[in-house]
Image (cartoon, rainbow over the protein chains, first blue to last red):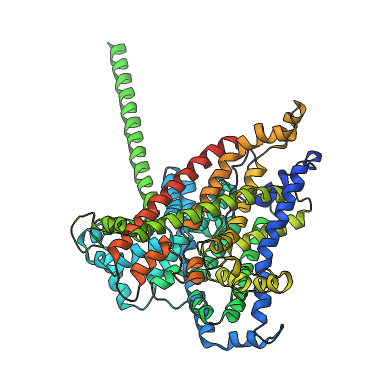
Length: 317
Length: 316
């Protein structure tokens, strides 16, 4: 999901979330024109369009040929060992990726806000690039980089400071889907970076850091005990976006031969559409939980940031 | 004589002071540069990560497209093969058409729905609907494909309901969820909520004062929209539409799960070439991938240009 918002106005220190700013767009008595009514009608139709497939899928999933409300279909889904196993694999990958992204991004975004504003364009471009490089293209490149011809190319070794040969050796010896986790990290990068950077923008990083320093806190202590509690909602949003991206991602898992939940879902669905429907609802509930985790972030505290081009979304199409 | 000595001493003192000051400032400059070098070092983990997993894969793909997947010297062979087969070009045509159609429909309907949403007066309802849009925009890929099979597939709930209650047989009318227009319906499912989420903040940027001023000057609501609101909004709307385009153009999982390769799209073609069971053809795959990057770069360039334009009205 994306949400793109405008820069804070003038000297108003905090930017508003989409929700808070939507309130402002509410025109007063002039809003009761035919236009607004028509727009609300369109909204209603859109909501119907979004709700009907969900309801239809639920009914379809529960009606496995023997009338509605047959819960044995639900039981059959959970009794399949592959279901639980792939769910665990996906959970592990999602947690590892979330950890990687948060650990990489938080100190970097903080440091750039605090001391290296000149590095912002670099970060912005790196966070925008994944839009031009969809998972299927990224996977094509990564496959060649770490296991194809390029893995042994001296030019690639030179460009990567000798890290690519090292990593590709590491990947073949260790049984960790290291490249896959990092690839997930790249896909989640635009959304996670926006979330963290926007919440950094909403606080006064300089003043907080100087205050912490004057009380004798070092860099790490400032980051962990002063900055992090203040940008916690942004970090949480970034984590949940990364998490739900990985939980639903099929393309890279398929390219890297990793048996994850979406792959299982795809394979099951080709044979048994009723079971697939139930699993689709299950996926919907996972997404629901992830988004609900973000709601407090967008909700009560209006100073939560969301800025132009803020993108809270997932790359799991 | 004495005065001369005094002034000499004074001069020397001043000189020393200047030298000291100069030295000190030079020192500070030096340590500043060192500190800034050190702060750059703290970015190193992130920059290395991006180099290894974001930049290099792209460079290797580009290089591979000119060396036939790294198996030969520099040549345009991969591109010649791309252009020689009509199905490759049709894949680009299909992908662009699918993305454009869903981006335009999603962009237009989504923007209007966003305006409707911004006008919902109950705050809890508005919050609920925004959350629901977030979920729906994230509900994509394989689960979405199966949800639509369950809804509009041959035995899908809505298909059967229409047939039994309205005697309307979609599939005998030529509709199929597994073909182009079916895919359009599926893609629109995640495009609509996305556009709503992207447009809401832009709508919030329309200040009520502008509307009041226009009305005070005698503008009709239609004139307000035509002369004030739309000229301010359109860069944001174009940016949103470009985002939808990129979103659809790179989408793979939804189409793959739905049509299992029965529809000819570029991502599906690439997957077939590099993930196929029979042979792997990185050369052509790389060339197709570079083609995708080029198309997407255009979309992203328009997106950023429009965002910059939109930020003009945001108080800067």
